[in-house]
Length: 487
Image 1 (tube, helix red, strand yellow):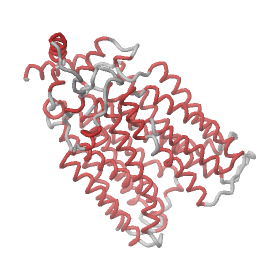
Image 2 (cartoon, helix red, strand yellow; image 1 turned 180 degrees about the horizontal axis):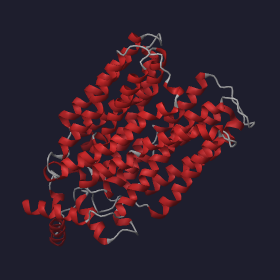
Image 3 (spheres, rainbow, N blue to C red; image 1 turned 90 degrees about the horizontal axis):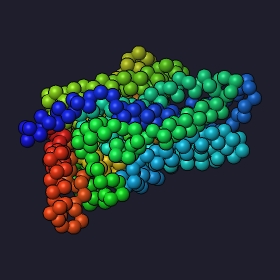
Image 4 (cartoon, rainbow, N blue to C red; image 1 turned 60 degrees about the horizontal axis):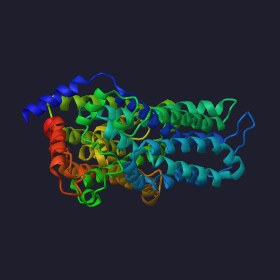
């Protein structure tokens, strides 16, 4: 075992230079950036659509209830295809699912201004639902592609880099949508820019992107061999691999990821959708009036996520801690850190703008550690079925995203009552605490035995020799401690 470990370490060092996997990570980073920008575009665009302008663009007299319906309609569609998308990406690869997701998002954004003018808010809701359905394909597919393209030693850095695009997309949209809406091109330009960007990305992805290194035209043989030896994914191809549903659903580590994902979504969306109202009504601080203050928490999360990913890989690759220990540490930072900060914010005296913004920024910033926590655990457990598991946990997590504002509506009777709001924060704190506690107790970084399919027929002597040869080339496929023991 010592010899094989030495061999693996040397193989990792031999391909440390930039390669096709890094270009793939860059393109997928742009996918999350653009997709999240299109989600946020309506949050800013709807303000311009309901306000008078100097250029004669239509103004819609939508009450608050209609605006909230439009803003939430994206998530109605987003839930629909999560689990099917994970299954399809696991069976057939993520390339074309991602293409359909982004191209559809682009077309819908290009049509949305016309739909709003011709069909009012019902047509806008329909566009947002379709966009949600399309983007439901994206994250499960991304996870599956990452599982095949990213070696274990680079998983924290490249995985975080890809998913941190979501925060950058939010920052860009918050800072540019207002300017576009106020320009001579008006509020339609917000959606036209988003649509064109999605279409351009789709063209680049169609030419360059691939589900696996084995199907890529652009990768070198040396880099392909390096990735396949160090990612833990199977080289048989997608369509030949059945999904071990029973093994997945009876796996305690999988349930640890599911609960962590659900707790994250409830706490995070409560934080970002309801804290501005709390700060306005209770603390007398209107953070929405300042676009820079609104973007500051996202900037902190984006920057800190890179620091956390670098630190995680440094600690694991230098054998200072095991991979599973890294996942536990950073998931705790991501969930128990905001829980403590929320408690502090709930007892903050009114009118203290500086301290409120600092606490909010620290809270969201610490949450960036979840990219190297539970978000990558799907790939740790099973690179071959990461997309299926991601579709399942992201779908259930999306339900908790919708429950976040409903919880506030149910619990808060008086928006100016600090006591009512504390009940909301205590619910988020409890979910953060319990979800991460279960994760700490039951998560694993071992590649599970159900990652690779079992032979459907007895192995003949000739096949046995081929298997022995493959095992000799890639010894880590016959061990379940790739994550914990080797890295």
